[in-house]
Image (spheres, one colour):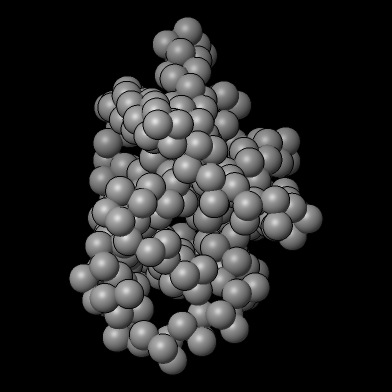
Length: 271
């Protein structure tokens, strides 16, 4: 893999990891369209690891307060301590479904990455799920809830959406944010929880593939590092953009994009 290819894939992965368009799907489709060899699993994991670091950096203040609520709660108001501790518990619960699914069906999901037809179909499913979320918003007049109003069931259901999104073409952010909207969360709160929820899952996948990642560095260290930096910068940009975008916009643009790209990939794979 050349350095420019690594940078391109890092940029694509970083943007599409947090925009609701499926990073895994794009990492399958983009190399196929550019006649590039599929990126090694180690490189894919490294890019996702870089994305996780970007989220940690972006939400550093939230993560600091969460840690402080356990380490030095006396220096915080009781209501804040309870709120941050509850958020930590919901993140743990939301992580469990993806952890179980990833370990139990790892070989099944890996086979899906070899099928561009599956990627195209799942991209269209992503668009359909976001379309339903927009329709739910249109028809619901009740006040939307925030992360502080979440309960155990909310965390578990959003976690189940995240577990589904292990399949390539199913957008993790698209599904988890939509799941939050279905449950009555406001869009930006659902997005915030979705981004925080990505950290343990991505880091867990990185630990499972740490050996492959180290081997890849020994063979193409400079290219891998360039891709990781591109992914980090693109990830922070995507998180910042989407949180601002969801203040006043629905998923419409992303629905059109995932539906169109998904249909194109399906036709291309059947041609």
